[in-house]
Every structure is written in structure tokens, then in C-alpha cells.
Amino acid sequence: MRAYGGCIEPGGWELDDERYVTPCPKCGKPADAWRVEKAEGSLNVYTGIRCDHCGYERGDHPGDNG
Image 1: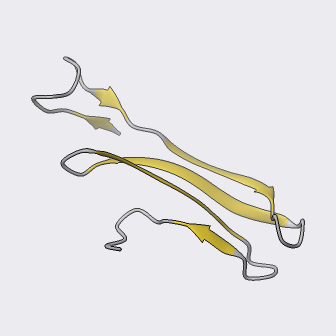
Image 2: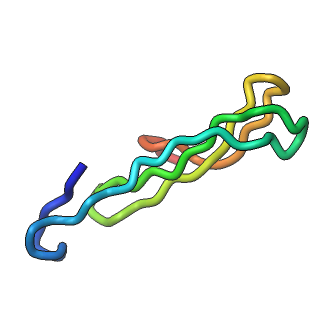
Image 3: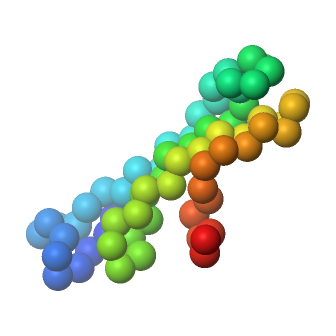
């Protein structure tokens, strides 16, 4: 995704949307992780990890209000 606006570089800015698998810090099994940039009036970065094996979850999700 590319963001445009008055305070952004001419030609826009490429936003990161990285999703990958990493070992869970609790159980060591594969867990889903992310680092996502969103242009929401300012540039916001969301990072986190979620393990479907043991239920471990840390971080924030794009679109969270809190």
C-alpha cells in the first residue's frame, strides 16, 4: 500500500505489511507475528505475535481502538 498526503514524501510512501512465523516465546512452537504500518492521520506501526498452540498473544492489531 502507498500513502499520500501533504506531509508525506512526494510520490507517496510505501507502507510495510509484514507477516511471518516465529517461535512462540511461551511454548516455542510456530506462532504468527506481524509488523504493519497504517496511515491513520499519522503513521502508526502495529506489531504483535499470536500462538494458536498455547494461546499466547502480545501486541496490537490494526484497527484496535485501545
